[in-house]
Length: 301
Image (cartoon, rainbow, N blue to C red; front, side):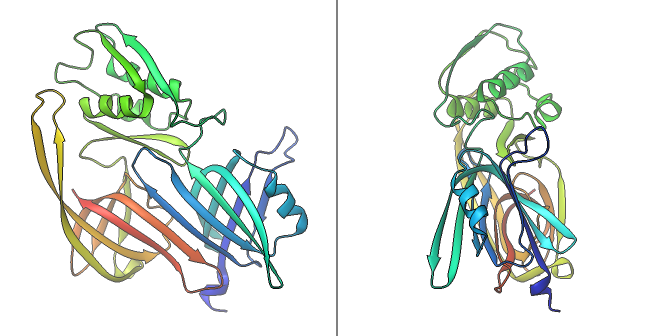
């Protein structure tokens, strides 16, 4: 049997009740399923589009009634699936095309809080007193956003203003929470994103964790392309504009669930080799087609 027919996908939507019942779990080994998942570190949600052919009428009806519930997708080969997406289900629509029923599911990661409310529409109005630890401010932001903490406590302990680990004077925020959080995080030398429904924090010039090794022998496909990117930002302390040049590399490899925006990976290719920070990726696959790849972009460390 070819590898194409050993491809495996597991979809979960909704939450089981106290007795473990409820929600929809679908193992699509015998069904055709295609997906496209785009992820990066920007404040807006990571998105997933999943299409499944010929679900049962009961499953189509259950999914159609769901919205704003947890949704996850794992894929790989039989016996070796890895999580590609975890977020909230936006909608599921089923359309009959010829003799086939095709169900299209869309989901967003970092779109809704733990209570099902949009994160992007939130505002924050808060003042912290002099000597408040920077980590406490970060935790207060997360509490206001109502998002799983993730690695915030572990990495956020490194948060420091130019004057130290605590505020040298009172600090007030009043505005859209995503804008205020991004401004604060830059001022303490951290970057943030929401990955798989949880907060991910990293030092501005370092990955959140160590990731995979990508090379021809581990699944690198085709050629790697390189480029440079100039980033201009204003230093929040000195108010001076600073320009940074990033060396970028982009390529494709066999489906790689262990790669996530914000983590590091090692790359070995003719065009570029070394350590990189994953800045964005796109998982694309079709159990009955030729696509089963991860397209990645990284910044040299």
